[in-house]
Length: 268
Image (cartoon, rainbow, N blue to C red; front, side):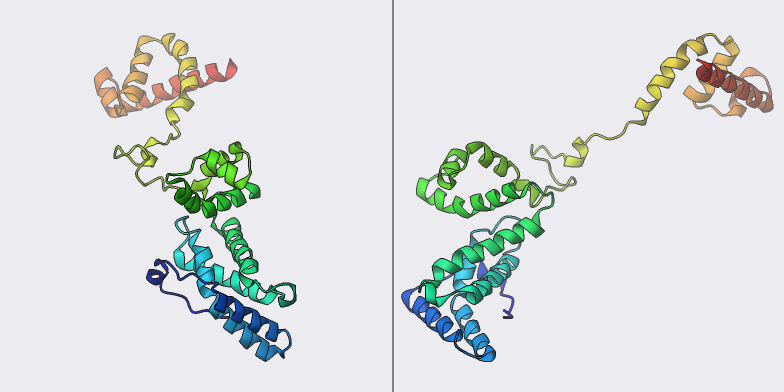
């Protein structure tokens, strides 16, 4: 079935509860009749049954809003689950389509999160537990009149508290914070400013330690040339003027000094 994409502003309103006796009886009647029809008529009856229960699909999708996926996309996924429920429902095994459809739609939405929405994929059990937590959180909040604690969630889902805590800590995997966004401390610094980076100077520490005693052994003029060139950043012309020699002599002296130091390092 092709379902027209729905206006997201409309979807944010509380959907009408579906599953009233009339809807349930009509859905069961349509799907029971569809099993006995030719493919063309069956498709038409299934489409009518799906339209009756579109509010049910939106209700299930609403449990997962605010988790990094757009409202409209989640509703479309729920519609896919609704069609699977319509086509998989067996009227001979009962007359409660709603009880069959809700877990089918919910399972489709969970698969969507598991397979497509994680930016960093944790283990599958953790993904599914996180989806279960999201599905019951609103109901728990209403029952407890306060935000549910991990212990409350663990008791409701009948899972260990440690696993609930791990699933809650993985919530950022859906929509991780940008390193260019504001950090969690609210002090005006972006996350990128707190990240470490390569310090090329660290790579030179060992070389400097090894060179220090060798440089100390050089004649005073050689040490002066090295200091002016590599620590003060003087040009060869400036060094030549300071020492009263030519630039060519400075160039040759530098080559001799550096080659000597290189040999000392490699021979050690």
